[in-house]
Length: 294
Image (cartoon, rainbow, N blue to C red; front, side, top):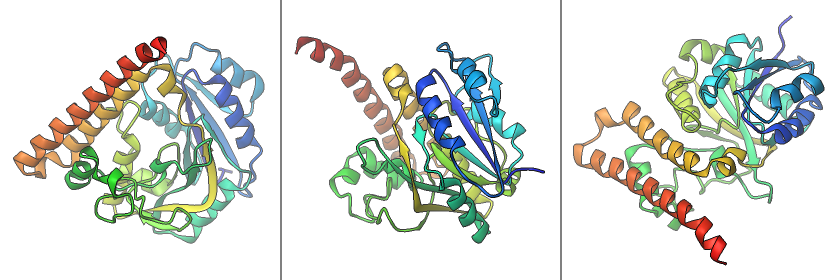
């Protein structure tokens, strides 16, 4: 008999975080049962061996190379048997009833193709990425020029992270974050797998966009809260993380908006992405020098 839920965790050199995550996962309760699929993206820190030794009940997939977040999750999706699939980052900790709450919500809302919980950082603050609007040309423009930060309570300017919404209020949104993203099997069958052109950012937004285009709804459900340590990869390879973040913005814009965007606005958005990305890389390069001089 197939389980209600398939939990897919993609890991790359996050052994200790992964261990902690799996401990919380296997302490979870779900009446219909769940399976856990760990995809190791060719880690060099012994992550896969740790899973095999300490969590033999997990389905372990050892990738021969690091193909990115979408690539790893797609490997898990191909073997998943659950009515629902949960993409879960290894740098998360889930409460024991989180799976049951989210599955119950999806069962009670057949129009929902995707839902995600409230996510908080280690300091208790809201992880702003847990509920988002699509980066339309207008939304991207407000973010790139800083209006979303200047006016966080504005329904017009703050749509990127929806900071004007009550974080404890159920809401229909454009997307939730792939760090903890539950998806209905029928929605996956209609939409297809994640786009592997995205390496480590943007694939969740793209998936939600395509799922919504099939008529499904996406919900932010704060009835349960998941801890998100926010991510080890950013500390391991900060320059690559920055590059992939802005590269994902370009891919998403090119794929979904560029063909329908006025030429001048399209040019401004693309130039803004390159400018913001270049500035972020410059700051990243200068920071170690500043710290070494302190």
